[in-house]
Image 1 (tube, rainbow, N blue to C red):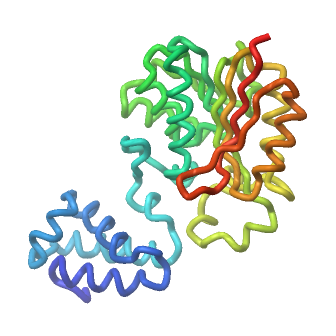
Image 2 (image 1 turned 45 degrees about the vertical axis):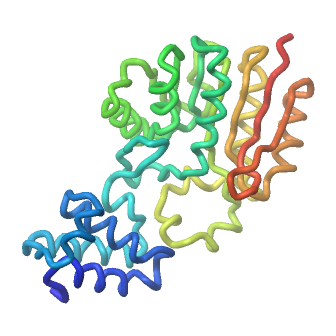
Length: 284
């Protein structure tokens, strides 16, 4: 091995990852703490600590996998979302911090409607469904996904956080599996246009295409979701959909056509980029 202690391991890994990662030192540290099962502070406090042969071999393998383009959360098997730890596999989209704003908006809306019926459409890892259920315990929550593997991952995460019995996991396309109209629809659907695919980072292209690609303009899934929602979302209900940063006006136009009497807004993320479509349906 080209290293024999924590400091030299991090130096080697950071150098190897520099061409492939935006934050090579951080990723090198995150991989190492997962190998050691120690907090990051341990690395800084004990730079001279040795690795066992098994730890060194595992670390070298993980760093090389990351350098080959594999997403870091698929290597470690976990990621943080909304202050919670979620297990992730190559069967699901990796949760992003930007998606947390959907949860925040939904929870704020649910404060006045604690017993509402909600659905997380295209649940993937289950991060939205689990976060909503933990923070709004009276909500009646459904989670749908067309992928059986994704539903298994979502159910496993719900079990990890002890909320599996409070979420109904349904296999099917978008809202089709629902047997009752929801008050709240939350979704992070596919929204990458086909001609954008090759420009995505290699690590993103390792994630499920079905969870990312959505036709020529990236809006196919949103069109289908809006078409289903217009006959299902209850009067006075709310719909929140994550969108691409250049899709705001197009998404607004589609939403206004589907819900001509609703209050439609495009909400920015913390970077000021268009990130969420918000549709507040009229009460009558």
